Image 1: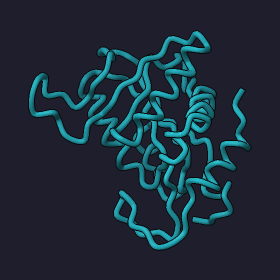
Image 2: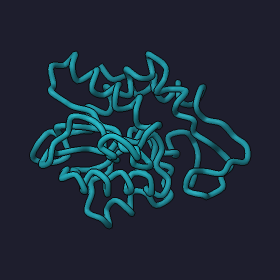
Image 3: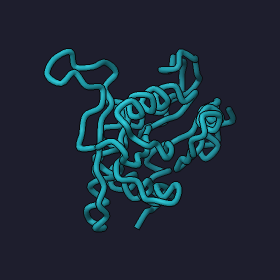
Image 4: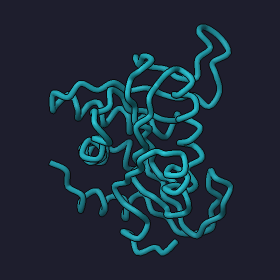
Length: 183
């Protein structure tokens, strides 16, 4: 059973840092959310897997796979598909590389997905949505059908709007307001 309050407490105590930071989007911020402190913790991973499974039905069909940009999405994907297995929910995972391998099959997308699979992109923290939209591009290129994007935390800095503009559903377990931060 998903314990949202416990996950929120873990994020507040282990992942939320204050100072001067440059984000992946290039923006500067007075706080940073290092969600790897949670996604790579056994209790945190379980909570995230449970919470994300509750967010996944994004349309008429339950997605066949979840995944996102390496490295951040990898432990999230693993948590979701592991919890899904305990619930007897068939679900595959995939990874999207920032660059193709340059050898072997030279793919951007790795995993057991096939053209026509319904997929959901997973993310730890969404700011502008740029990383997730890049993952969407690569997944569409291999024939995936993207139903939406889910994140642990939405920084409320344009990501949700960027997804909506492209026609994707977006959901998050938390927003920065859940931690007393106004964007």
